[in-house]
Image (cartoon, rainbow, N blue to C red; front, side, top):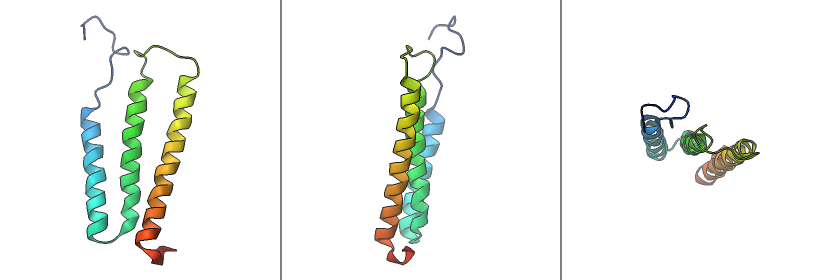
Length: 101
């Protein structure tokens, strides 16, 4: 990147947040199966959703060429992906621990 590029046009540096999110998701997944507290699967689903939001954030950054309606579409996709991730985590919890029903 050139030094003349404005701060807004630079892509955000997301390496550290991505690594922290991956570590938190994997750690909560391992702990949930180790102590058999499957409610922690929601933390794992949240970590996957946050990674997806980081991906979308990089896609709608101002340095990326503007496409009309793209941000609205991304917001809808983010909500749908979040819903399906948390619904899948719920069904997996119920499957693994039938006492939750």
